[in-house]
Image 1 (tube, rainbow, N blue to C red):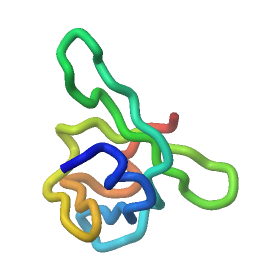
Image 2: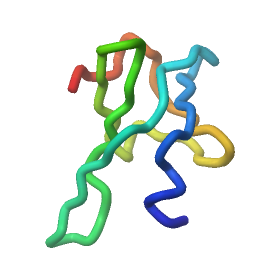
Image 3: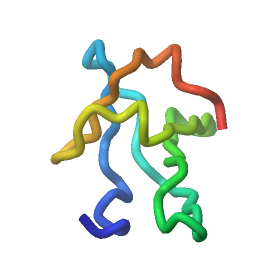
Image 4: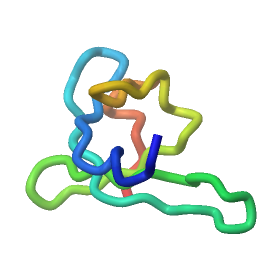
Length: 73
């Protein structure tokens, strides 16, 4: 999957609650991997998701954790 395909995808937590949409990502250049995804939740709130918290990526990004366990960006 190309990185640009992640932008705008809806993020859903383990309880099927909408967390928000992916708006940005941090890349670890030395490892060549994504270190975190920034998710816009509401009008001004942003949260950060690490790859280890992701269960599955398809039409939506499904998390292994609950919405209240996501760390603030």
